[in-house]
Length: 148
Image 1 (cartoon, rainbow, N blue to C red):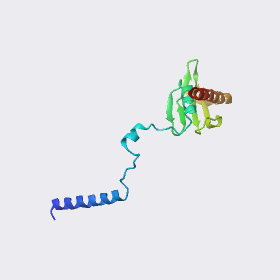
Image 2: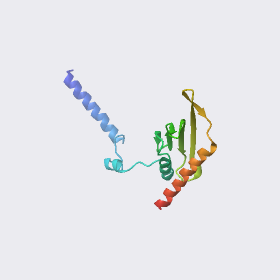
Image 3: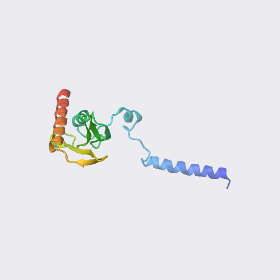
Image 4: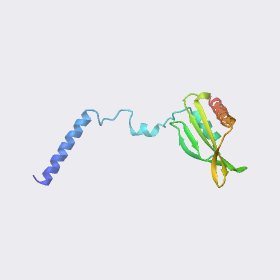
């Protein structure tokens, strides 16, 4: 067989296979799965939008290392205050629900102190995490009230 005839046969077989797949629905497009509906619809976050926005606003002074609006995770980088350059803090915020509830928010605060040229982990006052949670919850409630 010549190479030209082989290419034609291969193309015909491929077309036949693809046509069979299209008839079985593999390549069929759903009515709502169009270019305009994909580009026009904004993705929704997987957590409560008021808690999410309040968390970002409350922590806006800290550099962020990881932000996941679908999983509800906000991780900051280490941040030192100019008034205490030998201390640094890191905050992890987890939004656990789509409802605006106090138990839908979990905040973890980590602290390090500079000693001997390196950073050492240090204990964090338990009130620090609670104070940060309360600030986020208060701001989330303000955002909710303002939207209604």
